[in-house]
Image (cartoon, rainbow, N blue to C red):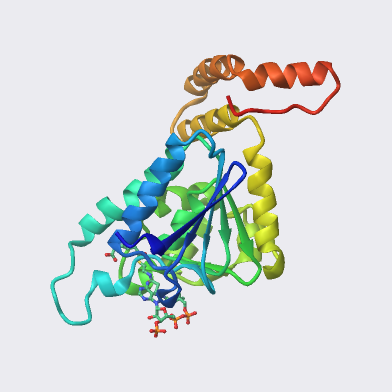
Length: 263
Ligand code: T3D
């Protein structure tokens, strides 16, 4: 496994992962997809990681599937497309959504195909005003994968989802922000600082509660109100048993800033 395809850096409680194949706009081949899966597994297990920051090296965030792997130019037999989806992208999306820690995606440049949808599966997407989002799939005769058909209509409604998925155009970051597809847009020279500050802020919040919020929102996509109320009752019991809940209330009563441990 070529470990340099994703760079890893820890600052405080934030783990930063940088997609690092800039010559091919950080597109994913299978080893790189497996490496991201491994880093997500490690992040889940490491109690000192309380927020994840995902970004890309060079001028792009990620151009999705490496098309040279999907259809080798030398004419050799490509891996079955359904295997690529099942082994590369579906596990990444599942792991991102199941990770009970906040994930910030700093989209530094174009995010296309699976690259766009991996970003949208993160909890906060903050993009450079020079970045854009392209559901590039239909431009090459494919359908959105990596959760695109799930998240797009939920995030922006069917009309805009149809536009993005069926016309495959370039959506600039500020427009993506305006329609509610992403959290915010930053000037290019401010993106690193803005995304880092957001990740650091999240990493010092009550991690357990943030994780439970994520679990509740994941479930709410498919639940009716009654099921969701019941789930909230159970998850609130979990949150209420955390050390951070005790600290939060104590700090309030003592009129000081809380110091959350993530436990
Ligand atoms: O098996 C399966 O396919 C199933 C899985 C599907 C998941 C998917 O993600 S399907 C969608 C795959 N992605 C795309 O179709 C996007 C393809 N790329 C583009 O449309 C454009 O590159 C961009 C709009 C993203 C950026 O355009 P631009 O003009 O800024 O850059 P460029 O010149 O097109 O690309 C720069 C280099 O990156 C170029 O290489 P070169 O000529 O300098 O040697 C280009 O070939 C390479 N590159 C860009 N995207 C990919 C790629 N190489 C491999 N795979 C890519 N996806």
